[in-house]
Length: 360
Image (tube, rainbow, N blue to C red; front, side):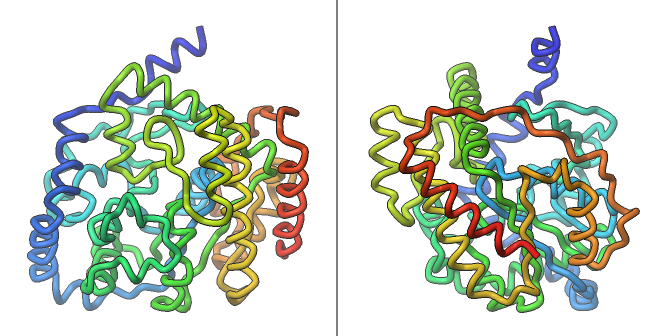
């Protein structure tokens, strides 16, 4: 009965309000870019006067706990972040804010599609900044995860992105910007080059538990795809390629092994191989960048060490502990399985321990 009730409470996708406008933004990005420039002209003086104190980016491989950390930090009310009521016209926040109030009921809470006990309403933050990035990345679906992302960005991206951040800060009357996107994991070097003081919260998770969670959600999203053709369109428009019909092999590391596993219906092994590929990249990256720019949060032990992790976030973000609502941290489902390839398992576990050694 509980599962049935949750299914009834899942947020339904509205084709005319969500699929169509997001598709229009993706296919006619030049038009929305033009509208955005009009916004900038109108707000020019106000945008220039916005002070950006912090730019904080939460990232990690999908199912690593990024949403939980986003909600935790958002609960401090110190940051501006994109929310469900930012949809569908994320790229023109000022104009959309003027007319969007009548579209949302902030008192209505629903479950996320992920079946992870996280409830959302119109004020819930999520990874909608990706919609802005996809408007500027050439051949987005092929290049969204490229580590040399500057090679694929339009010439006016950086200036537009700075103004996009300031517009959102202006609207919410804040000075600290918070973004969550798994894909920003591959853009850290670009962001640090252009915003040297930006901070990154890297979320990790014990690999066996992590890949079991990835597989569970993949099966769930595949089921949704079968039930509703709009579901995969919606995920694609938002830049989600981790699960279901829109799942992609990220061509880093030994990606050919991931392709081989998935083409032979070995989903679990494919996810573990991709986990290793991504976390090898994470380890190499973190050894290069300044330690003051990042913090690692391990989702697998955040419940057992709740106060310790909140203290670490508190110090990193310079926010007092009591501003965080620690009730937003929920226990993970028991997802352990022994069906992994022993060699892959050993490689992933060794890598996981190396990354954990960087936790201060």
